Each structure stands twice: as structure tokens, then as C-alpha cells.
Image 1: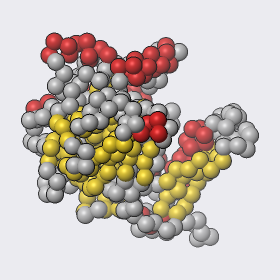
Image 2 (image 1 turned 135 degrees about the vertical axis):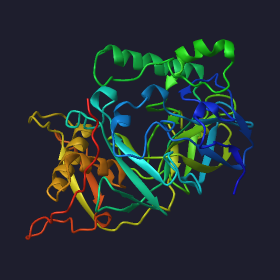
Image 3 (image 1 turned 180 degrees about the horizontal axis):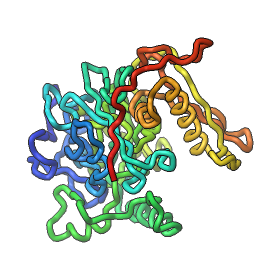
Length: 416
């Protein structure tokens, strides 16, 4: 096992750890630890809500989830010799739940998936699912099952939802400027169009004490993916993956967190993966001047690993860019994927699942989402593929009609 360079104690909150991580992006958050090119190391990662979500049958914690406090990132990790313009090579050697621990913290043998209420962030299908729901998943080896969504089990594709390098000052300014302009187009929208800097609940690692107020007022939220990688939520960034991140500051200042036991393409419920704390083993190296050499001026490129579960049979649903009200949109692939997901949800309810159970399942299980057609005007076509082997009943259409399963107590809903 590599040396643990960023250890976390499961019994202590994120802010009381030996090394303090961060939950904002800013070039002046200094490296908490430093590694050499070619070095392998282990990083412990805290569950993204720092233990606020419980292993119980209530969704009140999802309703009241402290969004200002996310994400709890381990790092920054400085890499000796990395300079702006380089590419940082990051190999994911291993990743998993908190080793050999059981307990109340997500990652200690269990994880969760949530649907956020519209008033607290919403989701991909927030107009159809406005309330907060939760499903808890138990881990047995590499397999997840849930008392809240019975009759399914699947092998997780464990991966970090969020990993990236620190922005430069100019890049941070660009983020804040363009996102503020978007917010200004509809400042009262629920959920909001973007998240501006929010000093409340900002955790800034080892930033100088006299500068924390200024840095907190400038630092970018970690919610979206950006040029530095960030919260990309790519389920295939699993064990064996190699990622090439652009470097914007001296040392690169790599950070990682938001580990997922499993996730469907799109993480469509927003809190849509199986969220957990755990560990990740990494190895880093540098390609000097790699950004110009390979034309990677922004956004990481990656080579996915080869340890994903090998599902061979799927049932797939398609959608086009026509709204539920029948309004035609032009090549709207976002809308098309929404419609494909809604078709899959409607289908699964014919077997006995509630719409919320089906929605949570699409967020957590290793479904595949694809843009299947983006040129045939006026309709984009998107598809969602569900592996049939995750169900313990026949899920394909047949002349005998759908079987009726016992959906159990269902997914807990928050009260208002």
C-alpha cells in the first residue's frame, strides 16, 4: 500500500483533521502536502457532505443538506517541478470505500443516493421531481443493494466524482465573470443558474489568516466542472484510469474528493451517485509544456481504466428534443436525454416501482447515456441503456406482460 499523505479520521469532522482540506477553488490556497513526479501515494477522502447524511429511513437530511459546505476536498497536493503550461499525469491506481470500517459515516460499508428538492439545488428532472428523497445502499464486496429499491444489485464502478488542479488568478476571474453574467439573466431562478462565490461555510485550507475574508469572497464554488477538471462526475474515471490535467499554477495543486461507489451517466438526481468517503491511490508525473504540445488549453483528457463490470445485455430508451407539452426544440440534446430518462422511469413503474425509486436507480446504477443523433434536424436523439442483469426479475417486454414486484417501503421522502 502506498504511504497515506492525506489521512482522515472518520471520528472527526472535516475541519478538525490533522490536515485541513478545502471546499473552494482559489490559486492562493497553498498545497497541504507535496509529492515528487513518479511518486505513488494514498489520499483519504471525506464524504462530500462531511457526515450530514445518515443511514436511516428519513430524507430530512437530504432536504436540509448543507450545500454551501461542499465539496470536502483533500488537498491541494503540490507536485514538485510542475509549472503553468505543463500537463499533470494522474494515474488512478486504486479507489474504494473506507477500508475495514463500519459505522455511521457514508463509506463505512454503505452509501446513499438523494434527489434534491427544487428549493435546495434541484436535479436533472427537477420539474417532475420537486421533493427530496433518499436511498441507502449497502456494500458487500463490490456489489450494492438497497432496502429502499429492492430487487436490484449491481457491481459498482468506484470513482472520484471530483478531481482537478487549481486555477490561475486570471482563470478564476474568468469563471466568476462569465457565471455572474449568466446568473444576472435570471437572478431569482429556483434552482439558480449558477453558484457565485459564497464566503459562508468556505474552507480554505492553509490560506493566510489575514487574507481569508478576501479569498473567500473570490473563491469559486466546486459544484461545476470547469477547465481544471473539477466536478466532472465521469463514472469511468475508475481504477486504472490515466488523466491529463492542464496546469495553471506552480505545483499544479491537485485536489480530489466526492468519491462514488457507483453512478449512472449524468448523475441525474444531482446527489445521484452512491456517495461515500473512502481512499484513492494515485501516481503523478509531468509532461513539461504539454498543454501547447498536445493542444490541451483547457479541460482534462483521460484514458479510462479496464476494471468496469462487463454487462452484456441492456434495455435502452430513447428521447428526442420535444418537450412534455409538445413544443419542438432544435437539436436540444439535454432535453432529449431528459426525455429518455423519463421514458425509462415510466417503464420501470409498470413493474411496481414508484417513479422516485426508478429515478434514484438511474442515478446510482451503472447506466450508460449516449448522444445517439445530433444532426437530424430538428430532433436530437439521446439514449439511456440499463443493464438487465441488475434486476432479479425479467425486465424485457413480453407477451405475458410485466411481472409485479414488491417495491418494499419505497424511498423515504422529506416532509415540508
